[in-house]
Image 1 (tube, helix red, strand yellow):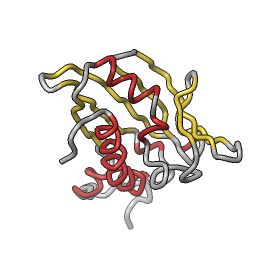
Image 2 (cartoon, rainbow, N blue to C red):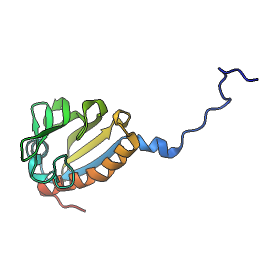
Image 3 (cartoon, rainbow, N blue to C red):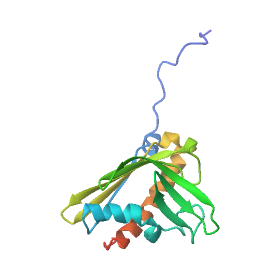
Image 4 (cartoon, rainbow, N blue to C red):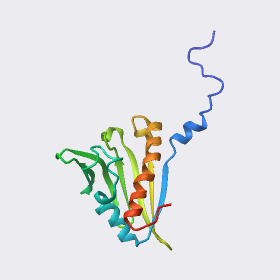
Length: 164
């Protein structure tokens, strides 16, 4: 009889799909303006470009804003939902936040958005990571991999850029 505390001779290999599911999601866009203006457009005016009809808690008619150390959505009836808590604010170069729209900080992931001068204007790079903090890591990553391109496409258009 085998020892109850023995280990199998070899551990099963995790599938490549499992590894990919928890990789950071990285998306980069370029807007035709300077770094300071790009940061300001992203953080001071998300209510003008964020696709609230597709990517929000309360839907069309709500308002999203960066308020002190929070990213906050407010419904027309005054209800609020905190999307994230900013814990590193480096204007106009970057910010980092715990990210948990429609959830709680208990189930948060992380986003870092950075702004860098390039020949065509400003490169905006969003890294979404920390999937192990999500309630369903693989499903969360897949959902954001679908949603972030729509969100950033609207931002690029708002900033006067062409969308491919």
